[in-house]
Image 1: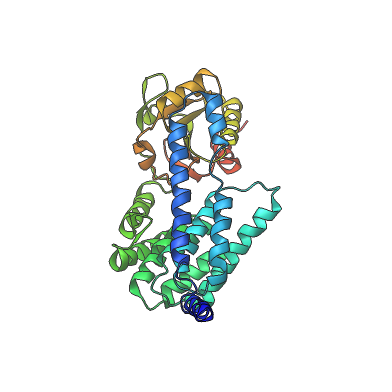
Image 2 (image 1 turned 90 degrees about the vertical axis):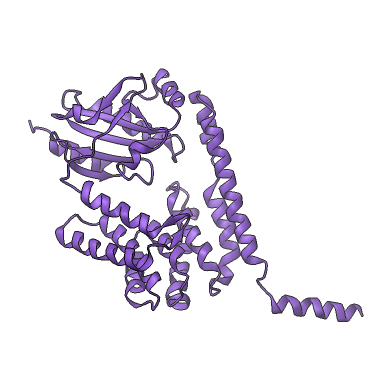
Length: 357
């Protein structure tokens, strides 16, 4: 009798080898999301810079959660149910910077990306469930990801999958060039996305919303376009308008109290403030977070540039900021000349706009 029960248990396991795996992966994803939500609430409830610094250091470890997920899905990448979690994994590992000294983590991330892309190419290319993967490939953002998206858009038989791939390709092309040819190609792709996959939802966002945001960027936030007006209250309670700074080069810095490595961002921003003459260049921040937190950072002189408060995110939304930090450099007439990560390219753009000695 005991032998019969043992055989029955083993047989059941082989009949349903991965019956619990999707549920387990769902639990892992939800656990990370809950811990992130709790960390954000804890950070927002703290105003003192020293306490915030301690909480920043307690941010949930994305790579640790990614590693747990990878251990579950790697052996089963040939199974279609893993596509949802593979897409989530790509977004997670590519959204968090890794210390360049951690060669082990850099190699692990690269291995995850390469194996997932290979599994899509070899096992799931014709699947109707590739929407999360397409969004994940945008987060990867490299040439192999763009190539795979283009193949999915042109060869996958499902029109809805093609539409999702189209909006993703348009996004990546926007990082390459503002040329008329690229702009026209992006518009064609976005039209296809809206027609074929407008109601497809990934991570709570429809493809129609993603396409509309990209159309807004093309029409209002491309190089040479007049920057949208910003009107907000600074850390002292004074109302300020972006248009009031015409005649100067303006470096807009969009940042948030929950972003990764805020200390590095503050160091870069303080260096910009020190480098440029205030009569020529205005450093203007847009801070997404609690006003009390911003005032505390100014009171401690940790932050020494003017910031507009953006607790509800409306100012950032007018520039379609999807990740922090982000920089936008405007020329003396208020036209956009650069949008991208703060750092050397933003600084070089500002330098080029100033009168040469």
